[in-house]
Image 1 (cartoon, rainbow, N blue to C red):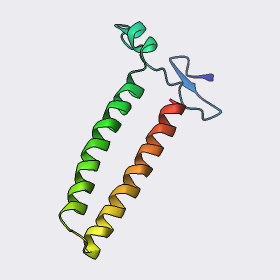
Image 2 (cartoon, rainbow, N blue to C red):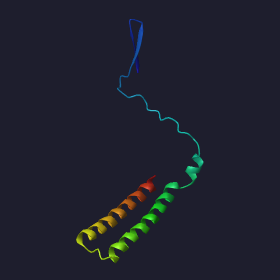
Image 3 (spheres, rainbow, N blue to C red):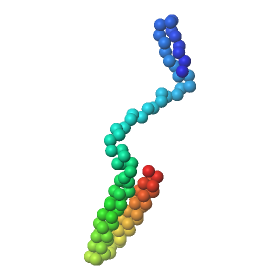
Image 4 (cartoon, one colour):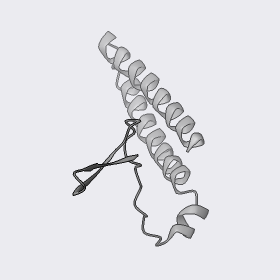
Length: 99
């Protein structure tokens, strides 16, 4: 930073290196931070959601197979449902491990 004076009246600060001003993150409130830092909330939520999702998925697959829905579209939908579900749970588990 350099100061440039114009006729001795105005002082202007110029950044000769064209650097942006530093970004300062505001302080976050500190309520219940010890609870959140010691309790693994995200893995618990993911685990509960996984259990519920497995129950609903098992019910869907049971009804698809029990009531004779063997058309090509239903089999494609069932396969897509299982593949996308497994992929999303694997991605969320990996992301949670890096959190």
